[in-house]
Length: 311
Image 1: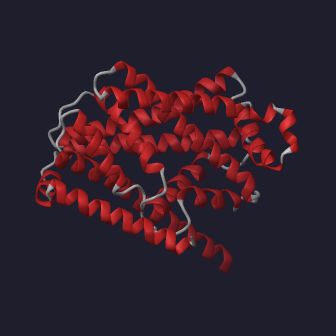
Image 2: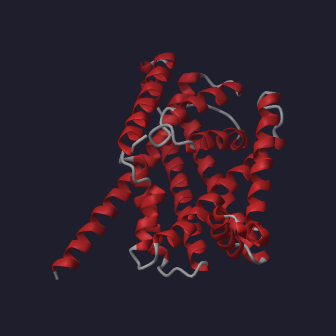
């Protein structure tokens, strides 16, 4: 499937799912819920989610620093937000992670080396989702149906175990005879370097868990803004599988998939579909706003490069 066709399929999936969910929930009810949300709670939600994004950029900066990439935190922060722009607002074949690779490569590094750093950061982010999920899922075992509860424990446990195994994969020397092993050994060795001391391990784990706690706490305030009263812990259980599902590249920036997952999982906690869909749309809009900030940074960076070329 070529890139243009993939993008078209994602757009169709997103618009199709959103249209279906809005029809089921009632578009008038969703619009009324969103327009009537508490602006102070929304501001708190945006501040928390924005802080989570900034902290995620800092995590990436620390990963790249350990891997001996130059560039200050300011560079990686701007690049991260520009990546959000490419993910959220630009229906193209260049995703946010791909843009970050290209941006780091512009500093004079090979793209494949920059890719390793971005891949490690992405892996740490997913690990954080698994950790948050397995902790809070077992703190509130009765929130979700038993089958879902067990499935999430298995998926999260397997994800954590797989991540731990990948850290040491490059040390299995007899696998060097396989050509594919080299592709996996380089990011494994890089990840080992990022986590090779107790301090670095604990530091990165704390960072990646904090990113998700801030983000999911932001969703909690979105819920309060529309009148949903659930505990923060409940959102720490519900949001990890929602985010994991949106990572699957079948829709545009997760739109439609996220709303469907929110409606289904929030339903187990007694939240109506229109409220869950409304919350998810607002959550998505917070990243649209961040993408707009990334757009401004991207335009400025292009203008700066153009001025430099003219001079």
